[in-house]
Amino acid sequence: MSGKKNTAAMILAAGQGTRMKSALPKVLHQVAGRPMLWYAATLARKVATQTVAIVVGHGSEQVQAYLEQEKADFEPFEVVIQEKQLGTGHAVRQAYPVCTRNDANQADQFLILNGDTPLLTQGTLASLVDYHQSEKAGLTILTTVIPESHGYGRVVRGQSGEIRRVVEHQDASAEERGISEINVGTYVVDASFLGKALSQLRPQNAQGEFYITDIIEMAVQQGLKVAGWVTNDYLETTGINTREHLAIAEKEMRRRICQRLMLSGVTMLDPERVIVDDGVEVGRDTSLYPGVMLEGRTVIGTNCIIHGNSRLNNCLVGNNVLIQDSCVLLDAQIEEGAVIGPFAHLRPGSVIHRKGKVGNFVELKQTEVGEGSKVNHLSYLGDTVIGRNVNVGAGTITCNYDGFRKARTQIEDNVFIGSDVQLIAPVTIGEGALIAAGTTVTKNVPPNALGISRVAQINKEGTAAKRREILSSSSAAHTQAKQHDDPEPSSLGSNLQQKKDPV
Ligand code: UD1
Ligand code: CA
Image (spheres, helix red, strand yellow):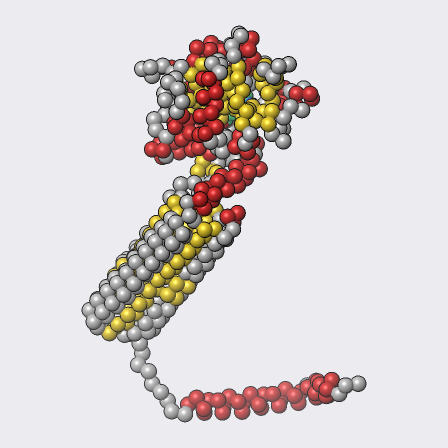
């Protein structure tokens, strides 16, 4: 970061977000798989040298629980509770004493940012801080010129372009509403000015709130230099107040993620239809087909192909893996060279070792498939460990639940399981055993044994032919009887006859 100035940061995240029409606090709504507050918190932590204070209020328990859960990403920080959300100025007033009480070397300046502006980049923030310092300003605000300025605070400039104040939409005159330069809600303020200015804030405006923006006019009146850093990228400054804004931010964030991945060597057939969460990693020469969703902490290796409409959440995928169309993989691990799908469902705790294959309409839960083993068609396997080079036949099912408890199935190396087998857990199939098709396995099968549980087959010579004879003669008699009752068939016949002759 620039300069030697000590910078503390405040993130305003206490508002309800009424316009979101949601039970969830606004700052916990997600953008590219992370609550928008995460972006503000990580950014502030990168730029600030001193305390980062996060002001929470509406839904504070939920917001605090989230901060606690993800704290490793933006530690250290202080949580400040704003009991009543009386406005952005009031929020800063709550954070100020917290930022000034602890630091051995006090902050020279404060970076203040809204918690609802997740697209803001570190580059822009760094430029803002640099500009503040190079201009020797007392207060610098981030602004942009936006085609649709409705709802934002407008930047009112004087004759020679100097910033005079920011007027909120609700308080603006018709003329002021015509101003297209808006206040982004990101400020750098000198410490020497901020404390006193906060104590002078009054809620004298249309919303009856304490506006942080009022300190701009105060600074001007006190003869302090007020600077404005104008960014060209107005999309980056989008403040999220509604679900529509949320969708705009989502789209832009995903565009950035896909762009970054493509630059690092990932192929996307249609990047607009690939959905990758922030934080997901994808290796070189991997191809992502339309409709792929990579969520959470998913990591994909190099040279993989992931076909259309497959969704991976918190999955670890090795190199050279092929995932066919329409798979759902959750908290699963897939090692090098494995082949999954189409239409496979891997539920949490599934591990597919090297070159394993899990095919069509197979569901796995807490199941390990050993190296080179195959579960190719129409199976459910739960709480199962499968060794190497095992073939699980089509339609094999583990009966792992007795209505009370889950039980485990173990299938050792080189086992061959025929089609349509039920394995009633707990049960172990010893190494090299063979299970006959259609078997219901109720007890352990020793190594190299054949397990079979079928009623012995008997063949009755000629029975099929006799049956056919009986049934066909009785059905002929039935048809005759029906024709007798019903004159229709003959008239139908003559109709057909008529149709045959062209008129
Ligand atoms: C604010 C600015 C406006 C700017 C816009 C940019 C003010 C008065 N207005 O308006 O000039 O153009 O942001 O997006 O600052 N918050 C609190 N405590 C409160 C109220 C709000 O922490 O008591 C937090 C909110 O959670 C939110 C942020 O402050 O993250 C901004 O609040 P919001 O109500 O969205 O302000 P805007 O009306 O968008
Ligand atoms: Ca806002």
